[in-house]
Image (tube, rainbow, N blue to C red; front, side, top):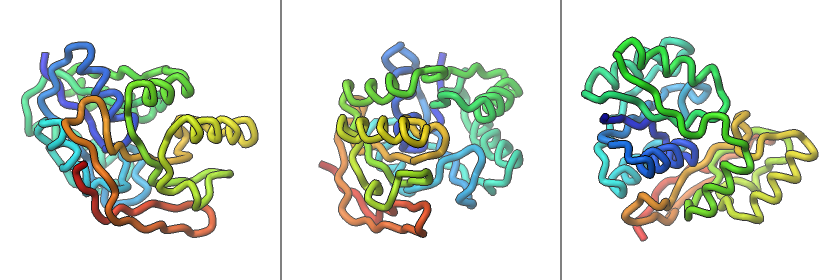
Length: 221
């Protein structure tokens, strides 16, 4: 069977893609949905401009589809992307969001495609440890939760970071894996990359409660 992987450049979509490849899934395409709105219910937005470089490092063709980002209407944009290719299934990085998973399954079912979600139901600390033990290099590019201040923007996700996230979980009950929207991430290197990346230029945007790490350029390393 052939698959298309929904891909944002974040840790969950990249881990799901790699796990699918480890299971022998034939991943023929990456699909990135680019929402016009910052508050898309379905799709990640920060730093999507750099996804083509990540796709090139994995030598997988990338389909980018612009989306209105409007609730429910954005599912049509995912459908349009799937209609442009011929695959048997879709790979997602959904972990615990039934809202996201159910809608992707509906769009896929309408096209006779199966959905493979290898991260579904994974315990949050286990997910993070899986990233670290397998050599994923990720940074935090967006924060929106108590305890996550401007200093977290651009921070590398490593064991120390995971310990600090665990402490915030104990204090504020945040999800260590960011599944509640607490933070967004970007992968700079992974076991399925032919080469990794370094951030050349970036800036922090902080409004006192939430913020983003806007990457202006990255380079191969």
